[in-house]
Image (cartoon, rainbow, N blue to C red; front, side):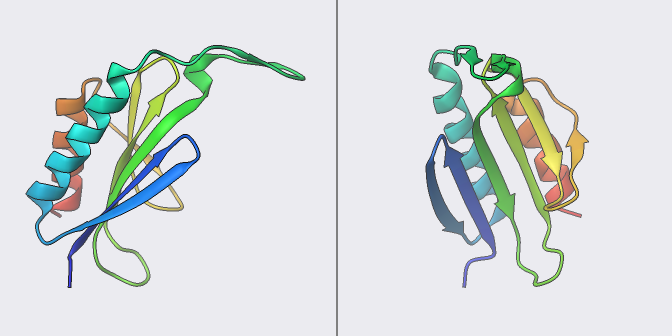
Amino acid sequence: MADWKLTIRDGSDVSRLKFDDLDTALEAARVQIDEVLERRPLATVKAIRDYEPGKRVKARIEISGRGFFSPPTAGVDIRGDNTLLGFTGGVTRKPLDGRTSEQVIEAMRQTLQR
């Protein structure tokens, strides 16, 4: 049974991959982050109000471990302006440090290894 689950939410598409070790899951997450960052930023959406690219989430990449009530979870939101916002926690999220994919992946590693 796999110990780590990588969930990729890219627009309306959701995919899940399973890994036996954390390093492989983190490397797959880094590859996904880099692929999303290669695409152009999102445009502003004008509806009832304006939604600037920095307020929109282009993709969310999240790794979670085993556990029923509170599995270790960390991930990154890739904003529409291609900025990264790392986080830890499932329902209640706390921000992680890091502006580049390498920094966010390292912060995720430290969080998930605890």
